[in-house]
Every structure is written in structure tokens, then in C-alpha cells.
Length: 131
Image (cartoon, rainbow, N blue to C red; front, top):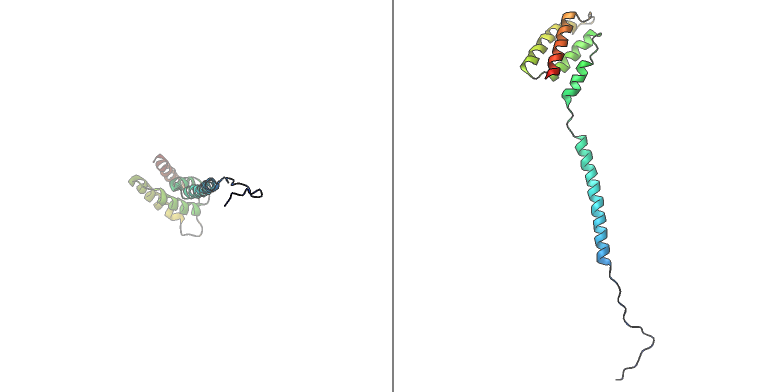
């Protein structure tokens, strides 16, 4: 057979194959998105579950007790005092303060806190603040 020249058919053309590069770009972009979203969730979880220093919160609340209302003050001082007292000295001071506060609890009408009880309260606050 003779080679007959074909005039209507063009020769082979090389087609560039960019599919691997496109695949790698898509994988990298998806990986960055997934890791950034995961990083945001881990950051929020860490900040949400960061242990709150309850001792500071209780200390602030015991300092903010309204001593004008003797009955409520007696209950709040006892509550936050129990939550704050850790050392033996603090526990002893809280026991003596709590004994003095007993006359202001469990009654319908009570008088104002006396000076002796207030001085024990202030002394307890100083000891708790020091620790």
C-alpha cells in the first residue's frame, strides 16, 4: 500500500495534564480548612473548660457581704467561709466566727451584727486574704 497523504486529519497534539496539580491544590485547601475549623473548636473548648479559680470568686463574694442585713450576712459568711477555709487556722477561726453567727441564724427577727462578731469577721478575712 502506498502512503496516501491525508489532508483533512491533523497530527497528534499533546494535551497538558494538570489533574495531579489540581488534586493536590484541592487536598491542601481542604486540609487547611479542616485544620483551621478543628483549631477553632479546640481553642473554644480549651477556653471554655479552663478551670475557673473559685477561691478568687468566693473571696470576692465574702468581701461583698452586706453586713447591714445580719441574717443574710450570717448565712453568706458561713457558706463562703466553709468554701474558703483550708488551713487549720482558718478552720478554727471559721468555727469561732460561726458560733458567734449562730444567734443571727434560724430566727425571724434579728438585731444588727455586734462589734465582737464584726471584728472576728474582719480577722477571718485578713487570714483568708493572707493565704
